[in-house]
Amino acid sequence: MKFPIYLDHAATTPCDPRVVEAMLPYFTEVYGNPGSRNHAFGWAAEEGVDRAREQVARLIGADHKEIIFTSGSTESNNIAIRGGAQMYEKAGPGSTGRGHIISAAIEHKAVLDPCKRLQKEGFDVTFLEPGRDGIVTADLVKGALRDDTILCSIMWANNEMGTINEVPAIGALCKGRGVLFHTDATQWAGKMPTNVEKDNIDLLSLSGHKMYGPKGVGALYVRRRKPRVRLASLVDGGGQERGFRSGTLNVPGIVGLGKAAEIALAEMDRDGARLLELRQGLEQSITGRLDSTAINGHREKRLPHITNISFGFVEGESLMMATKELAMSSGSACTSASLEPSYVLKGIGVGDDLAHSSLRLSLGRWTTREQVEYAAEAIVRAVTKLRELSPLYDMHKEGIDITKIEWAKH
Ligand SMILES: *Cc1c(COP(=O)(O)O)cnc(C)c1O
Image: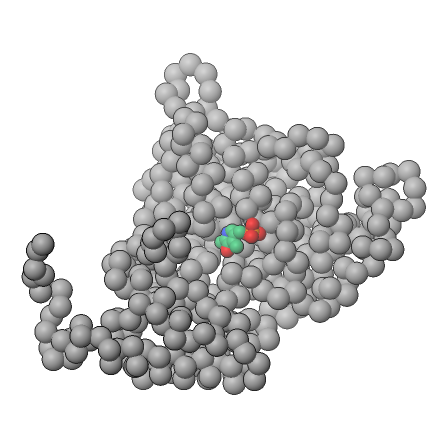
C-alpha cells in the first residue's frame, strides 16, 4: 500500500487518466481559438468544445445549448446567484427592498458569500437552518417563500456530510411560485442520476475537479425554455457562452470536463454501489469498535462516498496528527489565528465540542477495500490512545456527566 492514503475526495479528486489522454491533443495540436470562425484551427477547437457540451448536457438531462462553461463551481454559483438576482430584482415604486432570496446556512462559501454580498446591496436573504439530520426540506423552503421571493439556491448534496437535500421537491415548489431555482450540484453531479427537467431545476453548478476531471473548469446549466432564464453578466467582453461568460474558452479543460462527464455517466451505478459498500464497512468498523461516536447527518439520505464522524473526547486536529498516513478533513477550519468549528456542523445543531472532534472521510474511484480497512484500524487505534490520555474520558467512563460539572471560575 502507498502512503498517505487519500480519503479527501470531497475536497478534490485525481484526474482520470482517460480524461488526461482526451485533453492532451488540445494543448499542442488542436490549439485554435474556438472563437476563430473563419479557419480550420478554430473549427477543430470548436468541435472539441461542442462534443464536451453534449457530454455535460447528457450527464444532467439538459440540451447542449443550455451549458455554459466556467472556471468551476465558484464562478458558476456567482453567475447564477448574482446574475439572477440582478436580472429579476423587484425594482420600481411599491417595492421596499430589491427582492427576497432563499438559501441555507449549510451551503458552501461559494453560495453563502455571493448571497451575503447581495444582502449588503439591498436584497433580503433568508438562510434556512435544517434540523440535526442536515436535510434542507421542501417544507422548510415553503415556510420561507414570500410574494417578493425571486430566487432560491439550495445545494443538492452537502460537501461536509454528504447529506442530500430535497432538490426535486424544492424545484417543483419554486416552479409553482414562479421563483428561479438554482442548485449547487458540485458534490452530486457525476455521482448521482440527474435530470434537470424531472428535477425542476433552472440553474445548476458543477465542477470538473470534483468528478475526476481537471481543476479550474466547470459548467453552469441555464434553462432555455419554460422559463427561458436570463442572467445579468458579471464579466463583460467578447460575449462568449451566449454572453453569460465572456473570455476565451479553456479548450483543454472543457474537453477534459466533457470526458469526465461521459465516464461518470457510464460508470455511475457501478461506482456508486461499490463506494456505498466500502463506506458502510468503514462506518461499521469504526463505530462498532468505539463508544461515544456519532455519524453526522441523515443515516440514509447521503451520498455513497462521504461520511462525517464525531469522536467524543478527542480533538479532530489531534486525531489527524495521530494518523498522518491518512489524508482527511476535520470539522474545524483554520481561520487566520483560531481554529473555528465547522459552520455546517454548528448549523445543524452539533455543539462546538463535537464539531471540533469530527472527521470527514470521502472515498473515490480508486479507493480500495485494503485502504479502507487500514484507515479504520488506524483511526480506532489513534482514538483509543488519545482517550487514554483524556481525564474527561475517564470521568465519562466512571459515569460522571461532564456537562453537569461546574468549572472553577477565575
Ligand atoms: C468544491 C465545491 C465548490 C467550489 O468549486 P470550485 O470548482 O472549486 O470552485 C462549491 N460548492 C461545493 C458544494 C463544493 O464542494
